[in-house]
Every structure is written in structure tokens, then in C-alpha cells.
Image (cartoon, rainbow, N blue to C red):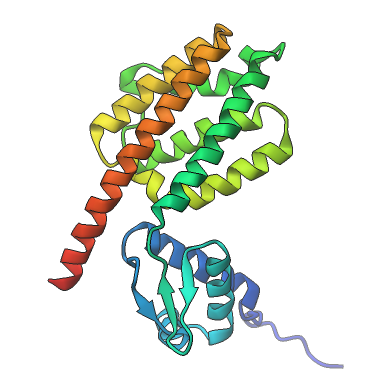
Length: 237
């Protein structure tokens, strides 16, 4: 009979699919945090060395990032962080507007509108001294506001498409919350949209939602161009 080893149990190496996911999340976060800039180039070997991983999970992560539109492969020249395509981003914003306006129309016709929107009302009509102010937190709350409006319709396919669009514009959308005035405007505009929607003035709610998104889109374009310029200056320094 083989004696059991009473010592420390053998630890299995991390599965490569889990490692690829962690690498994917780390690279995407570096893109979001402006540590990797549009146009930056690197090879799989360089990235594997930095991530302390083999090339297989690195390649899997890069292929996934390529599919999501964050990087592109360069023939015999490694990988590149994709430049911002403002036209594509604006098209995604247009899709988002269509989905959210349709969601408001469906919500206005629901019998339990107040119940469906109660989680949003608690967040966006809270007393000023009870509101989160940190940009990253407000960005997440803002994202959930808009996703909740679509999810509350009960249309899972609409919610899935909206979530995919949200993922693809997150890199610039979160920049809208780097300034205090935009944080204050978001609280005020979300509260007003909810007030009008709960009063079942659907067309007015749709108009306010469209204006809110268009203003945010214009702001993030300006901030993105400024952030890119600042990041490139730091990289050259």
C-alpha cells in the first residue's frame, strides 16, 4: 500500500484558459487606463515575458481582444493597439440610442413601472451627501442605469445586444466622469429622466434620454482627444 503524503497538497498549475482570461482582462484594463495607447506595438514574446506566461495564453487573449476590436495583428510585425475609430464609436452610440428609446417605450406600457425602476430611483434621487462622487464608481453606476432600463423590459435579446455595445464603448464612455461638472450633470439628468418616465410622459422621457446621450458623446470625444494628446506627451517625455 502506498503511504499517503501528509504534507502540503500538490497544487495544480493554473489552467491556461483561466490564465488567458486574466491576461485578457489585464491588457484591456491597461488600455482603459491609458497605459497602452492607440498605435503602441508589441510582440507576443514581449507580452509573454511581461505577463510571466507562455505564448499560448497570451495569443488566446490577443485573439479575443482582436475580436472585441481593441488590438489588430500586423503581418510579421506583432500586434498594435487599434487607433480610435470615432465614426465606429458614433455608430455604436446610435445603436445604443435606438435600443434605449425602444426600452423606454416598452417600460411606459408596463403595469409595474414603479417596481421595475425602484433600484434606479434609490441611486439617482438620493440626497446629495449620500451620492458617490468618485469617477470610476459613478461611471459604473451610469453604465448600470442605462443597462437596467433595457433589462427592465424583460427582453433578453435586446439586453444582450445593448450589453455588447456598452462593452465596446466603455473605453471612452468612462472618461465622461473625469470632471466634477459631468458627474453633477449625470445625477441631475438621470433623476429628471426617471421623474418624467415614472410620470409616464414617454415622448418627453425619450427626448431627454436622447439629449443626455448626445451630450455625453460630445463630451467624451473632446476628452478622448485631450487624453490621447496628454498621454503621448508623457510617453515622449
